[in-house]
Image 1: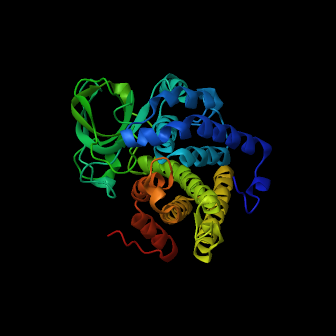
Image 2 (image 1 turned 90 degrees about the vertical axis):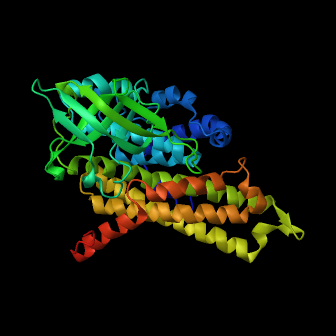
Image 3 (image 1 turned 135 degrees about the horizontal axis):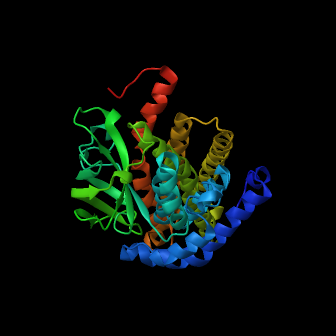
Length: 390
Protein backbone atom coordinates (compact mmCIF):
# COMPACT_ATOMS: atom_id res chain seq x y z
CA UNK A 1 0.00 0.00 0.00
CA UNK A 2 1.24 3.48 -0.88
CA UNK A 3 2.12 5.51 2.26
CA UNK A 4 2.94 8.89 0.77
CA UNK A 5 3.23 10.76 4.09
CA UNK A 6 4.95 7.93 6.00
CA UNK A 7 1.96 7.45 8.31
CA UNK A 8 3.61 4.20 9.40
CA UNK A 9 6.24 6.19 11.28
CA UNK A 10 3.49 7.64 13.50
CA UNK A 11 2.21 4.17 14.42
CA UNK A 12 3.60 1.88 17.07
CA UNK A 13 4.87 -1.59 16.22
CA UNK A 14 1.76 -3.06 17.83
CA UNK A 15 -0.53 -0.81 15.80
CA UNK A 16 1.16 -1.78 12.55
CA UNK A 17 0.97 -5.47 13.49
CA UNK A 18 -2.79 -5.29 14.08
CA UNK A 19 -3.32 -3.47 10.79
CA UNK A 20 -1.19 -5.91 8.86
CA UNK A 21 -2.94 -8.98 10.26
CA UNK A 22 -6.35 -7.64 9.25
CA UNK A 23 -4.94 -6.55 5.89
CA UNK A 24 -3.82 -10.12 5.20
CA UNK A 25 -7.26 -11.41 6.16
CA UNK A 26 -8.92 -8.97 3.76
CA UNK A 27 -6.51 -9.80 0.94
CA UNK A 28 -6.75 -13.55 1.40
CA UNK A 29 -10.34 -14.10 2.50
CA UNK A 30 -12.50 -11.05 1.72
CA UNK A 31 -11.35 -9.81 -1.68
CA UNK A 32 -11.62 -13.21 -3.42
CA UNK A 33 -15.33 -13.52 -2.52
CA UNK A 34 -16.72 -10.02 -2.05
CA UNK A 35 -17.45 -9.24 -5.72
CA UNK A 36 -19.67 -12.29 -6.11
CA UNK A 37 -21.28 -11.72 -2.69
CA UNK A 38 -22.12 -8.17 -3.73
CA UNK A 39 -23.69 -9.28 -7.01
CA UNK A 40 -25.62 -12.03 -5.20
CA UNK A 41 -26.76 -9.62 -2.52
CA UNK A 42 -25.53 -11.62 0.46
CA UNK A 43 -23.24 -11.06 3.39
CA UNK A 44 -20.40 -13.64 3.42
CA UNK A 45 -21.33 -15.18 6.78
CA UNK A 46 -18.64 -17.80 6.41
CA UNK A 47 -16.16 -15.08 7.41
CA UNK A 48 -17.71 -14.44 10.83
CA UNK A 49 -15.80 -17.12 12.80
CA UNK A 50 -12.49 -15.96 11.32
CA UNK A 51 -13.30 -12.35 12.17
CA UNK A 52 -14.00 -13.48 15.73
CA UNK A 53 -10.66 -15.27 15.88
CA UNK A 54 -8.93 -12.12 14.64
CA UNK A 55 -10.48 -10.17 17.51
CA UNK A 56 -12.12 -7.47 15.39
CA UNK A 57 -15.45 -7.51 17.28
CA UNK A 58 -15.40 -4.95 20.09
CA UNK A 59 -11.64 -4.78 19.67
CA UNK A 60 -11.29 -1.65 21.84
CA UNK A 61 -13.31 -3.09 24.76
CA UNK A 62 -11.56 -4.62 27.81
CA UNK A 63 -9.94 -8.03 27.83
CA UNK A 64 -11.80 -8.97 31.02
CA UNK A 65 -14.92 -9.36 28.87
CA UNK A 66 -13.23 -11.50 26.25
CA UNK A 67 -12.34 -8.58 23.94
CA UNK A 68 -8.96 -7.63 22.52
CA UNK A 69 -8.42 -4.54 24.67
CA UNK A 70 -6.79 -2.61 21.84
CA UNK A 71 -6.36 1.15 21.72
CA UNK A 72 -8.58 3.30 19.52
CA UNK A 73 -5.97 3.78 16.79
CA UNK A 74 -5.66 0.02 16.46
CA UNK A 75 -9.45 -0.23 16.33
CA UNK A 76 -9.55 2.45 13.64
CA UNK A 77 -6.95 0.64 11.56
CA UNK A 78 -9.07 -2.52 11.77
CA UNK A 79 -12.06 -0.59 10.42
CA UNK A 80 -9.87 0.88 7.66
CA UNK A 81 -8.72 -2.51 6.48
CA UNK A 82 -12.16 -4.14 6.66
CA UNK A 83 -13.70 -1.39 4.55
CA UNK A 84 -10.81 -1.64 2.13
CA UNK A 85 -12.51 -4.95 1.44
CA UNK A 86 -16.10 -3.72 1.52
CA UNK A 87 -18.28 -1.32 3.48
CA UNK A 88 -20.63 -4.20 4.28
CA UNK A 89 -17.87 -6.15 6.00
CA UNK A 90 -16.81 -3.12 8.04
CA UNK A 91 -20.47 -2.35 8.83
CA UNK A 92 -20.94 -5.85 10.21
CA UNK A 93 -17.99 -5.47 12.57
CA UNK A 94 -18.85 -1.87 13.41
CA UNK A 95 -22.43 -2.69 14.38
CA UNK A 96 -21.34 -5.76 16.34
CA UNK A 97 -18.72 -3.83 18.31
CA UNK A 98 -19.72 -0.18 18.52
CA UNK A 99 -23.51 -0.47 18.42
CA UNK A 100 -24.31 -3.81 20.07
CA UNK A 101 -21.36 -4.65 22.35
CA UNK A 102 -20.54 -1.08 23.37
CA UNK A 103 -23.99 -0.25 24.83
CA UNK A 104 -23.92 -3.47 26.83
CA UNK A 105 -20.46 -2.51 28.09
CA UNK A 106 -21.33 1.15 28.75
CA UNK A 107 -24.87 0.79 30.13
CA UNK A 108 -25.27 -2.86 31.04
CA UNK A 109 -25.12 -4.59 34.39
CA UNK A 110 -22.08 -6.65 35.30
CA UNK A 111 -24.17 -9.78 34.74
CA UNK A 112 -25.19 -8.60 31.25
CA UNK A 113 -21.58 -7.81 30.33
CA UNK A 114 -20.28 -11.20 31.41
CA UNK A 115 -23.17 -13.05 29.78
CA UNK A 116 -23.10 -11.39 26.38
CA UNK A 117 -19.74 -9.77 25.60
CA UNK A 118 -17.44 -12.84 25.52
CA UNK A 119 -19.54 -14.82 22.98
CA UNK A 120 -20.13 -11.65 20.96
CA UNK A 121 -16.37 -11.03 20.80
CA UNK A 122 -15.96 -14.52 19.34
CA UNK A 123 -18.76 -13.99 16.80
CA UNK A 124 -20.81 -16.75 18.42
CA UNK A 125 -23.60 -14.29 19.27
CA UNK A 126 -24.42 -11.57 16.71
CA UNK A 127 -26.03 -8.29 17.69
CA UNK A 128 -27.80 -5.42 15.98
CA UNK A 129 -28.80 -1.89 17.01
CA UNK A 130 -32.39 -0.71 16.78
CA UNK A 131 -32.72 3.08 16.87
CA UNK A 132 -33.83 4.36 13.45
CA UNK A 133 -37.54 4.10 12.65
CA UNK A 134 -39.36 4.38 9.31
CA UNK A 135 -40.38 7.99 10.03
CA UNK A 136 -37.62 8.97 12.43
CA UNK A 137 -34.09 8.81 11.09
CA UNK A 138 -32.27 12.09 11.64
CA UNK A 139 -34.73 12.90 14.46
CA UNK A 140 -34.50 9.84 16.72
CA UNK A 141 -36.14 11.67 19.63
CA UNK A 142 -39.42 11.35 17.74
CA UNK A 143 -39.39 7.55 17.99
CA UNK A 144 -42.70 5.87 18.70
CA UNK A 145 -41.44 2.42 19.73
CA UNK A 146 -42.69 1.92 23.28
CA UNK A 147 -41.70 -0.35 26.16
CA UNK A 148 -44.33 -0.49 28.90
CA UNK A 149 -43.37 -1.73 32.34
CA UNK A 150 -45.65 -4.31 33.89
CA UNK A 151 -46.55 -4.68 37.56
CA UNK A 152 -44.06 -7.52 38.00
CA UNK A 153 -41.19 -5.41 36.57
CA UNK A 154 -41.19 -7.06 33.15
CA UNK A 155 -41.66 -5.12 29.90
CA UNK A 156 -43.83 -5.31 26.78
CA UNK A 157 -42.26 -3.88 23.63
CA UNK A 158 -44.18 -2.59 20.60
CA UNK A 159 -43.00 -0.72 17.53
CA UNK A 160 -40.63 -1.03 14.57
CA UNK A 161 -37.12 -0.13 13.47
CA UNK A 162 -35.76 0.41 9.95
CA UNK A 163 -32.42 0.07 8.13
CA UNK A 164 -30.99 -2.30 10.71
CA UNK A 165 -27.61 -3.80 9.78
CA UNK A 166 -27.26 -7.43 10.91
CA UNK A 167 -31.00 -7.50 11.65
CA UNK A 168 -31.75 -10.87 10.03
CA UNK A 169 -28.52 -12.45 11.29
CA UNK A 170 -28.62 -11.20 14.87
CA UNK A 171 -29.24 -13.32 17.93
CA UNK A 172 -29.91 -10.25 20.05
CA UNK A 173 -31.02 -6.71 19.26
CA UNK A 174 -30.17 -3.67 21.37
CA UNK A 175 -33.44 -1.79 20.97
CA UNK A 176 -34.11 1.78 22.05
CA UNK A 177 -37.65 2.60 23.15
CA UNK A 178 -39.61 5.16 25.10
CA UNK A 179 -40.80 3.99 28.46
CA UNK A 180 -43.58 6.51 29.04
CA UNK A 181 -45.90 8.62 26.95
CA UNK A 182 -44.79 12.14 27.83
CA UNK A 183 -43.15 12.65 24.41
CA UNK A 184 -39.73 13.54 25.83
CA UNK A 185 -36.46 11.83 25.07
CA UNK A 186 -35.72 11.47 28.80
CA UNK A 187 -37.61 8.21 28.88
CA UNK A 188 -35.55 6.52 26.15
CA UNK A 189 -33.97 3.32 27.45
CA UNK A 190 -32.04 0.46 25.89
CA UNK A 191 -33.19 -3.17 25.98
CA UNK A 192 -31.48 -6.45 25.09
CA UNK A 193 -34.03 -8.31 22.99
CA UNK A 194 -33.40 -11.93 21.95
CA UNK A 195 -34.44 -12.24 18.32
CA UNK A 196 -36.21 -15.54 18.96
CA UNK A 197 -38.69 -13.76 21.24
CA UNK A 198 -42.36 -14.23 20.40
CA UNK A 199 -43.61 -11.20 18.47
CA UNK A 200 -40.16 -10.25 17.11
CA UNK A 201 -39.80 -10.22 13.32
CA UNK A 202 -36.94 -9.26 11.02
CA UNK A 203 -37.71 -8.61 7.36
CA UNK A 204 -34.89 -8.26 4.83
CA UNK A 205 -34.74 -5.00 2.92
CA UNK A 206 -35.12 -5.88 -0.76
CA UNK A 207 -34.04 -3.94 -3.84
CA UNK A 208 -30.86 -2.37 -2.45
CA UNK A 209 -28.43 -0.93 -4.97
CA UNK A 210 -25.88 -0.19 -2.26
CA UNK A 211 -24.38 -2.25 0.58
CA UNK A 212 -25.54 -5.36 -1.21
CA UNK A 213 -23.03 -7.52 0.67
CA UNK A 214 -24.68 -6.51 3.92
CA UNK A 215 -27.67 -7.76 5.88
CA UNK A 216 -30.17 -4.87 6.19
CA UNK A 217 -33.56 -5.41 7.78
CA UNK A 218 -36.74 -3.91 9.18
CA UNK A 219 -37.53 -5.05 12.72
CA UNK A 220 -41.01 -5.20 14.18
CA UNK A 221 -42.11 -5.85 17.76
CA UNK A 222 -45.64 -6.90 18.55
CA UNK A 223 -46.24 -7.41 22.25
CA UNK A 224 -42.72 -8.71 22.79
CA UNK A 225 -42.49 -9.72 26.46
CA UNK A 226 -39.13 -9.06 28.08
CA UNK A 227 -37.93 -9.90 31.58
CA UNK A 228 -37.07 -7.16 34.04
CA UNK A 229 -33.36 -7.68 33.48
CA UNK A 230 -33.64 -7.01 29.73
CA UNK A 231 -33.24 -3.27 30.32
CA UNK A 232 -29.78 -1.72 30.21
CA UNK A 233 -29.82 -0.16 33.68
CA UNK A 234 -27.30 2.56 32.93
CA UNK A 235 -29.15 3.86 29.86
CA UNK A 236 -31.32 6.94 30.04
CA UNK A 237 -32.32 9.56 27.50
CA UNK A 238 -31.28 10.10 23.92
CA UNK A 239 -27.72 10.71 25.08
CA UNK A 240 -27.21 6.96 25.53
CA UNK A 241 -27.80 5.83 21.91
CA UNK A 242 -25.99 8.94 20.65
CA UNK A 243 -22.92 7.87 22.64
CA UNK A 244 -23.06 4.57 20.76
CA UNK A 245 -23.34 6.39 17.44
CA UNK A 246 -20.26 8.45 18.32
CA UNK A 247 -18.31 5.21 18.71
CA UNK A 248 -19.54 3.95 15.36
CA UNK A 249 -18.91 7.25 13.57
CA UNK A 250 -15.34 7.24 14.81
CA UNK A 251 -14.81 3.83 13.18
CA UNK A 252 -16.49 5.01 9.99
CA UNK A 253 -14.02 7.88 9.65
CA UNK A 254 -11.27 5.26 9.37
CA UNK A 255 -13.33 2.81 7.35
CA UNK A 256 -14.10 5.31 4.60
CA UNK A 257 -10.37 5.85 4.18
CA UNK A 258 -9.98 2.13 3.53
CA UNK A 259 -12.49 2.31 0.68
CA UNK A 260 -10.74 5.41 -0.68
CA UNK A 261 -7.34 3.71 -0.49
CA UNK A 262 -8.66 0.65 -2.32
CA UNK A 263 -10.07 2.80 -5.11
CA UNK A 264 -6.90 4.86 -5.40
CA UNK A 265 -4.62 1.81 -5.54
CA UNK A 266 -6.83 0.20 -8.17
CA UNK A 267 -6.91 3.35 -10.28
CA UNK A 268 -3.16 3.85 -9.93
CA UNK A 269 -2.31 0.32 -11.08
CA UNK A 270 -4.83 0.51 -13.91
CA UNK A 271 -3.35 3.81 -15.11
CA UNK A 272 0.04 2.13 -15.53
CA UNK A 273 -1.21 -0.81 -17.59
CA UNK A 274 -4.14 0.56 -19.63
CA UNK A 275 -2.71 1.73 -22.95
CA UNK A 276 -4.48 4.39 -24.98
CA UNK A 277 -3.00 6.02 -28.09
CA UNK A 278 0.18 3.96 -27.66
CA UNK A 279 0.95 4.97 -24.07
CA UNK A 280 -0.32 4.17 -20.56
CA UNK A 281 -3.17 6.49 -19.59
CA UNK A 282 -1.25 7.33 -16.39
CA UNK A 283 1.09 9.34 -18.58
CA UNK A 284 -1.65 11.81 -19.54
CA UNK A 285 -2.12 15.00 -17.57
CA UNK A 286 -5.83 14.56 -16.90
CA UNK A 287 -5.31 11.19 -15.19
CA UNK A 288 -2.31 12.43 -13.21
CA UNK A 289 -4.42 15.31 -11.89
CA UNK A 290 -7.10 12.79 -10.87
CA UNK A 291 -4.56 10.66 -9.03
CA UNK A 292 -2.94 13.68 -7.37
CA UNK A 293 -6.31 14.84 -6.03
CA UNK A 294 -7.17 11.38 -4.74
CA UNK A 295 -3.82 11.02 -2.99
CA UNK A 296 -4.00 14.47 -1.40
CA UNK A 297 -7.43 13.90 0.10
CA UNK A 298 -6.48 10.45 1.41
CA UNK A 299 -3.42 11.84 3.19
CA UNK A 300 -5.47 14.65 4.77
CA UNK A 301 -8.08 12.15 5.92
CA UNK A 302 -5.42 9.84 7.38
CA UNK A 303 -3.99 12.66 9.45
CA UNK A 304 -7.44 13.67 10.71
CA UNK A 305 -8.36 10.16 11.81
CA UNK A 306 -4.97 9.39 13.33
CA UNK A 307 -5.01 12.54 15.46
CA UNK A 308 -8.64 11.90 16.42
CA UNK A 309 -7.65 8.41 17.52
CA UNK A 310 -4.90 9.83 19.71
CA UNK A 311 -7.38 12.28 21.23
CA UNK A 312 -9.83 9.45 21.85
CA UNK A 313 -7.16 7.36 23.56
CA UNK A 314 -6.30 10.38 25.72
CA UNK A 315 -9.97 10.84 26.62
CA UNK A 316 -10.05 14.39 25.23
CA UNK A 317 -11.98 13.94 21.97
CA UNK A 318 -15.45 15.42 21.42
CA UNK A 319 -18.46 14.16 19.44
CA UNK A 320 -18.16 17.25 17.26
CA UNK A 321 -14.62 16.27 16.28
CA UNK A 322 -15.94 12.84 15.34
CA UNK A 323 -18.61 14.53 13.21
CA UNK A 324 -15.93 16.47 11.33
CA UNK A 325 -13.91 13.33 10.67
CA UNK A 326 -16.90 11.24 9.57
CA UNK A 327 -18.25 14.05 7.37
CA UNK A 328 -14.93 14.81 5.69
CA UNK A 329 -13.62 11.31 5.19
CA UNK A 330 -16.84 9.83 3.83
CA UNK A 331 -17.25 12.77 1.47
CA UNK A 332 -13.73 12.53 0.07
CA UNK A 333 -13.97 8.74 -0.19
CA UNK A 334 -17.19 9.05 -2.17
CA UNK A 335 -15.55 11.48 -4.59
CA UNK A 336 -12.43 9.32 -4.90
CA UNK A 337 -14.52 6.26 -5.72
CA UNK A 338 -16.32 8.21 -8.47
CA UNK A 339 -13.07 9.47 -9.94
CA UNK A 340 -11.53 6.00 -9.83
CA UNK A 341 -14.56 4.56 -11.62
CA UNK A 342 -14.21 7.21 -14.30
CA UNK A 343 -10.51 6.56 -14.73
CA UNK A 344 -11.24 2.86 -15.23
CA UNK A 345 -13.66 3.71 -18.04
CA UNK A 346 -16.04 0.93 -19.07
CA UNK A 347 -14.14 -1.62 -16.98
CA UNK A 348 -15.08 0.41 -13.92
CA UNK A 349 -18.63 -0.93 -13.94
CA UNK A 350 -17.52 -4.58 -13.65
CA UNK A 351 -17.72 -6.48 -10.36
CA UNK A 352 -14.15 -7.73 -10.81
CA UNK A 353 -13.05 -4.16 -10.08
CA UNK A 354 -13.88 -2.51 -6.77
CA UNK A 355 -14.44 1.14 -7.65
CA UNK A 356 -18.14 1.07 -8.53
CA UNK A 357 -18.96 -1.28 -5.64
CA UNK A 358 -17.22 1.09 -3.24
CA UNK A 359 -18.88 4.07 -4.90
CA UNK A 360 -22.36 2.62 -4.43
CA UNK A 361 -21.60 1.55 -0.85
CA UNK A 362 -20.28 4.96 0.11
CA UNK A 363 -23.52 6.60 -0.97
CA UNK A 364 -25.10 4.75 1.96
CA UNK A 365 -22.23 5.54 4.33
CA UNK A 366 -22.68 9.20 3.32
CA UNK A 367 -26.23 8.95 4.70
CA UNK A 368 -26.12 6.62 7.70
CA UNK A 369 -24.79 7.29 11.20
CA UNK A 370 -25.81 10.91 10.71
CA UNK A 371 -26.23 12.31 7.22
CA UNK A 372 -23.60 14.58 5.73
CA UNK A 373 -25.94 17.55 6.24
CA UNK A 374 -26.69 16.68 9.87
CA UNK A 375 -22.98 16.60 10.63
CA UNK A 376 -22.67 19.98 8.90
CA UNK A 377 -25.24 21.40 11.33
CA UNK A 378 -23.46 19.81 14.29
CA UNK A 379 -20.27 21.59 13.26
CA UNK A 380 -22.14 24.80 12.55
CA UNK A 381 -23.60 24.77 16.04
CA UNK A 382 -20.19 23.98 17.54
CA UNK A 383 -18.53 27.02 15.99
CA UNK A 384 -21.40 29.54 16.21
CA UNK A 385 -23.15 28.44 19.39
CA UNK A 386 -26.44 28.66 17.49
CA UNK A 387 -28.79 25.70 17.06
CA UNK A 388 -30.01 25.38 13.44
CA UNK A 389 -31.87 22.11 14.05
CA UNK A 390 -35.04 23.94 15.11
